[in-house]
Amino acid sequence: MHGTVGGRKNIRRYYCSGRKQGMGCDQPVARADELEEQLAEYVRHFNPSPAVRRAVVCRLKEQATKDRDEEGARRLAIEG
Image (cartoon, rainbow, N blue to C red):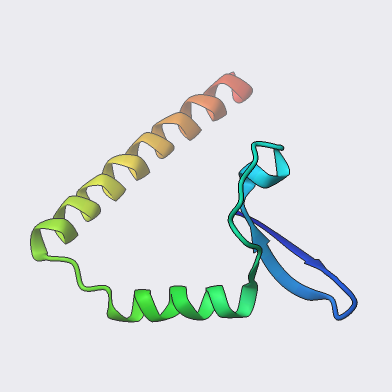
């Protein structure tokens, strides 16, 4: 999704990436305020199981370690 501001009233909206790339997307353009409220409502009620929470935390820790390692390698390459 891409965000944009436009129209006579400068309304914030989102539209499908495929539309911008000329891929024939027929999904309607959505008003940002309505879409963001739907997303906030979903997140408010999102309650994953303990197993899913553990898996997400594990994956986040793995990614953080990988990011730190890559950052350290870049720093070493720059500093010599």
